[in-house]
Image (cartoon, rainbow, N blue to C red; front, side, top):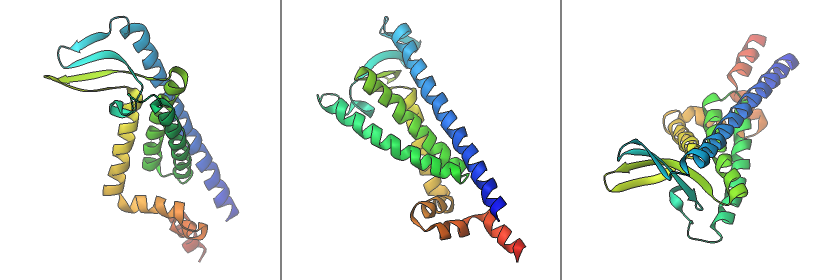
Amino acid sequence: MNNFFDKRSAKGYEVCVLYAFLAIILITADQLFKLMAVNEIKPYGQVFIIENFFSLHYAENTGSAFSMFADKSWGIYFLSIVSLVLGVIIMILMFIAARRSMQMISLAFCLLFSGAVGNLIDRIRLRYVVDYIRFDFGTATFPIFNFADICAVCGTILLIFIIIFKSRYFEKFWNVLFKSKKNEIILDPEQEKENKNAD
């Protein structure tokens, strides 16, 4: 029995390291893309990839997604605090899911964490977020965004997909968060299998 929990703990630790490493890669990629935007796009303002549809457009966003709070002097501080708190919570949830080998949920939280931290670094370092991806639809322009925003949106979509279409899978994670350790162990299929073999 002790060997089982030792192996499970070791495996959980390895999975945590894996998702932490993936988050570091995504955050690093986000910062590199933003550095390229500053060096290669800012001097020109806008570089068209597909005329009148897709372009790389340098922008400094002092607000959140879709430039919310951009016109408020206190907005950058409020958003930084919110991003920091959410980042810590999401990181904890990511590690809880990773420890239990819940891969889809771990990936969703990893993407959300990477997006939050990527933009948080900008807010702390620059007091604004560097955006550079722009889509135009005739006279309408979709709000300019960046790689960190893509990570956050993909993580949100994946989490919504899990909640709607993998409800039992998400319910197991919910039980891990809010039910006793005893119930959590009973819910583990590998533990149930070992208990049956022991009988």
